[in-house]
Length: 353
Image 1 (cartoon, rainbow, N blue to C red):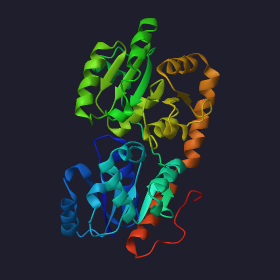
Image 2 (image 1 turned 90 degrees about the vertical axis):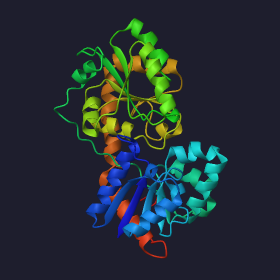
Image 3 (image 1 turned 120 degrees about the vertical axis):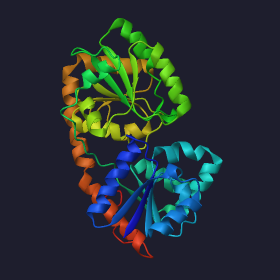
Image 4 (image 1 turned 45 degrees about the vertical axis):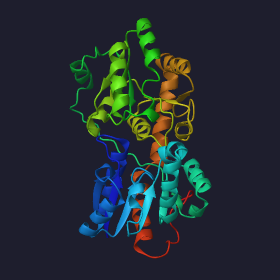
């Protein structure tokens, strides 16, 4: 089968990482797979033309709105993998909700990362019951052992040395990630403890917000904005940082959190449903609800070695048990059968599978 994998794949983004994993699974299962950035197409007729010219038999899309909107009337069966932005943010826009409703109604299958996202989707679109499958994100890390993270930081003007405590915020720069949420906290904290640094790293997705973040970080002591890194260098950076920070307003399932857990980097994340689905407070990570509470949790991690030594192995076991690539591969190769015939396939993976 020749499959089009359609996704908003900004460089070094979580979407790009997920799309590449799915593409790898399809290719190694003997299918042909073309991965295309949904931003390369303006409207559905552009995708219809691409499908016709390239002999595409089926489509898998990442995001109900960003990619799914292009599948209206596409002429071939499709399935959609959706995340937190779709059902937590885009549904607030009447036009986007209308488009996503049409896309969901006609999809052969939908894939949610968590039970909560599945329930939200089935509440929004009751017609999808029985077609929404749960598949947590798979995780794969491969740190570049030759990448000198602290030397790289110094080349960008960050005064990082062996004693620096590097808090790493990995995100595409867009509103839902709220990258400036902890800026004032770190700027004030730096006056008390010059070892602490907040490193914001990721692609510029929202140009207006990116400009604001650049301006703010120039003024904020101890806060730095760096461009995205290749995945293996980012994993090396995680391996040589103090902890991973998440300040998002909404998440489906954060790939950066899962990668940090696998690499043995403790996580302090904002207490939102998507993060709480991954993190059990004080067991697999730390959660906070305010900037002040973040600082309390960060100081605990700095002073309580027993806490750190408990969090790291528990988080790693969570990833190993619930986020294997093999389980993810089986799901997507099986779901392709949904796209090759007229009827749903019995026995497709479910919440318990």
